[in-house]
Image (tube, protein in one colour):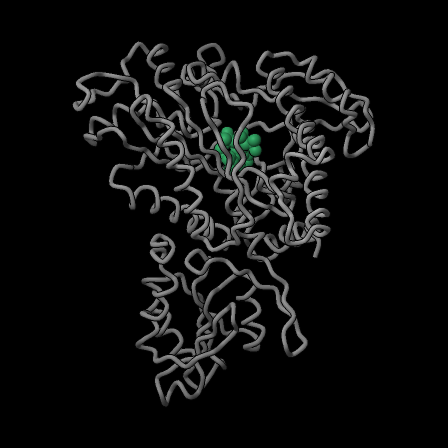
Length: 511
Ligand code: ATP
């Protein structure tokens, strides 16, 4: 299956099986806004729990917070979002399509890198075992040309954007001959800056109302509460504050399903450290976060780091963890060294001190911050697209299965009486009533057993528990495993322990 097809199928499957619906669909939907259905909401909640437990429960020095979406408007002046949370946009005059100028240029650079990789692949085949890839990368003129072109282009874009030289960003697009992917035309408008925050009014009368913004990131709620948490929790540096919640961005180009939404959910953690120690902690969190992803058991080749050439106004180092989505490697999570930029800016704008007295050093300072920031919806898409499989079975039939990591699956087990009579539904419901305290279980008695198995494969249910006539004799049920499709007889009394082994989040957290 090619990647385009895979992506289309994942989107269709997500809708058909109650994972994700377009928002207000009866009115033809709202661009880049989505609703999570009955199975989606469970998977999303499990992903959030996995993150929360790994960050808060597993770290003695990290605590949680749930700040409001609305914040005092000065927050966004201080954070730089009013003045600098812009994306450079450009329109193609022929297709009338709007693009982010930086994304067009990044895509061009990525194409150059791919050309280099192709050359390297060819050489690998040609030279076989003797191939020295590092040397080839540095010395082969063609490969060097492509790689230099990619990095020079990105560097020039970064310099122009930093200097606010939008004319040069346009020149760069023209010089590189970048065409509109839809019309193929190179007929571009000027590049303009566009602020991504949604504004709204608080208060009923127009004159008395003040303009508020829907938060474009959850982080600022953590910064303004830094002292509240530090003092009431008697936290000592280094320590972290974690938060999950909605964020809103008026994205210029909102495509790719739930990858780029206008309303989305972030899971962020700000780690407050001593000035001068930020690089040590930056490296620590890069590693720690990658390990968290790896514990999900998806193939390691699906992840890579991307170090930023162009840094945000607040950062002195930044890297993304990229995931190989059906449309290629894209940012899943960002790890940023945010210096003392935010706390200092809030000190200046509020007139309140946001400092920590370090008893070991005997001095006050504004802590430095390492941030880990992941989009819950992007994580959902990563897991869903990786899990989606169409499999041909030995008996010549086929099935669609979601191989979601078992502890994260929306429904953990389905209880299926073989027939709707002879006391089997009653026994099934007894088992359901026993297990539902610990697991999200579904009871399903409709249709033939094979059909019910397929239905649960399609939503990623790790186990099906079938109650048959023999159950009445031996108090055992058939436990079918989603991935291997193997079946074993298990005594009813052992079910809970058996399921706990592979379904509890601790199996991921311990990795
Ligand atoms: P991008 O470059 O893709 O726009 P970003 O660098 O602006 O992302 P950050 O500001 O670092 O993103 O936000 C942290 C995380 O929030 C991202 O890694 C991503 O997972 C998530 N995120 C950001 N914007 C969106 C969005 N529009 N829709 C869904 N998730 C998002």
